[in-house]
Length: 516
Length: 60
Image 1 (cartoon, one colour):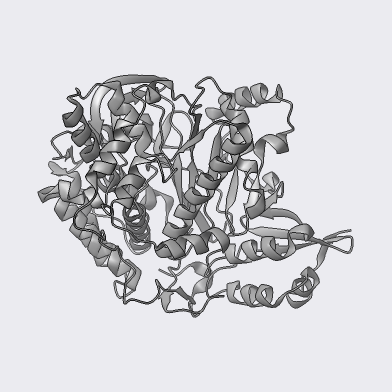
Image 2 (spheres, one colour):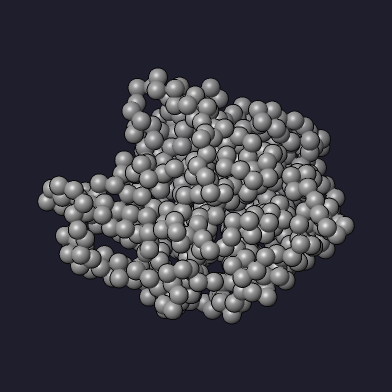
């Protein structure tokens, strides 16, 4: 493990799963599933395919204490599966599920190439790993374009402007001792109003399967949420998702799964979005939020904040009149400050930036165009609209919106801003380059990534919480469900750093064979 | 906050952002006079119908 100037790990794992949009520049009628298969396979040099164990996944398990008989998306999934069975590919070939040398997972989720960062325990690492995902996909698009003789375009956004959304999900591994009801009431107002700094901006309004003219709004995803609390993720999406797959000891841990956020190009927006959410979750271990934080109508507030062109973002409270989204975020920050250790350097930096950002959102939001995606994008659109004398409903502006999200740094509009020096950075390029090649240090992903680097041919299965090896005709399983900083992780990392062959790990960690 | 299995254990550290005295927070943009003409050039090259043609399956 690297030994440099240290930042303490957060006692929490966080990770991001991002579905990317895919298109071919020269042909709108192209089969995007076929393109996605070829795209993901271009990552072969960075990882190993077909190791993922689906048998330990159960998206029907609900945090409210039951197992859902069916999800609303089961029909859609079956429909997609039926269509995809007509293709000349096996299930494994369509999935093209790779575990990468940096501990990430990269695969084809029906149509969308999906990059799941390795679990991280510092924000600095998470931002670098998220950007590493962009760079990996950018290179895969180049390789697929060369091979397919056309231009594959990848978009880190969440909509096609015609009522089809795809997600950027956040994961926070937290103690299960925090009561579920406390999480729901505590996170609702926070997540609804967080879009004022986490939103990626969108031109137009949508509902399922339909796009509409409607001007600029601050969130890509707000149009697609119609339920308060629920287990679904593809239809009738809820503000609070109840999927209960901790990928760790379920008696001790919960993975809080946030599906309401936008995909961010801005490193600062990612850093602030994840950091503030982790701070609120940490404070909820100690107390409930005050009742004055409860919203009268969270679903209405969610959309009205996104669509409010005045930037006042007024919202009705359940028990005490009204407030604004910015003021409520400020109240959350003050409340968090009573419980969280702000001597921790990353927590302190996030908390201070949270307060400063919320203040600027109230006094001078345009000054945040170097940090927040929606402000940067609105500024770009406004500049272009004035130059070309376009109305806000001109479709050219929606195309400019789309190109903001292009991951090709030579063509994308976000990257035009970044290369012009107009965007604040969190990661250095060397952090990102390292994150493409290496897993995060203080994480069980370190063990996963190093196993891919050292023993790929000996692996038989991988999941977030275990790795299975084959050695001399027998299978051995290394459980990672307790591989956390300060628990088992350090020992596992030391062993894999020394290991040259897989048998060394098996002996040192005293792994027993699980089958012949 | 301590995770359940971390109570009374020492926490490890991960590498910091490296030399230069930078903390773990954001760094300001590096130039005062951005090249806005280059950005406008890229926007002018955007196909006006690109978004109309862009259609995706619903994801999660």
